[in-house]
Length: 123
Image 1 (cartoon, rainbow, N blue to C red):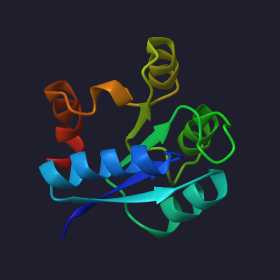
Image 2: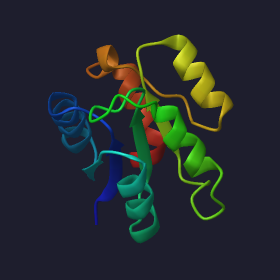
Image 3: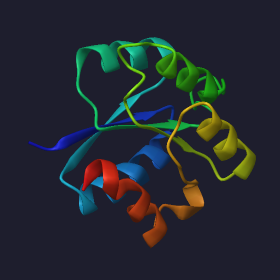
């Protein structure tokens, strides 16, 4: 059975690119959510090997860090690995400080380093 990855807040193009990368290289399926309510509901109802949160959510441009903090402050969800999808080093550092595992940026989607970051959770 494929592992599930939750892609939070990506636009259609970015979601397609991320889904293609993950589903082509791992036995995993990428599902999309768009904001805090649907993300937290999905995390409570299904099992995910990894959550990847866009730094700025596509639908309303709110901060993806807020969802990361919601996940990490919930006893039932806090152990789920979360990555931040951002090209900005300061955003990556803030996410890791809040409990995320090392993430990557959109520019890195095709790089071997990104696959290496995903492998511990999806390999």
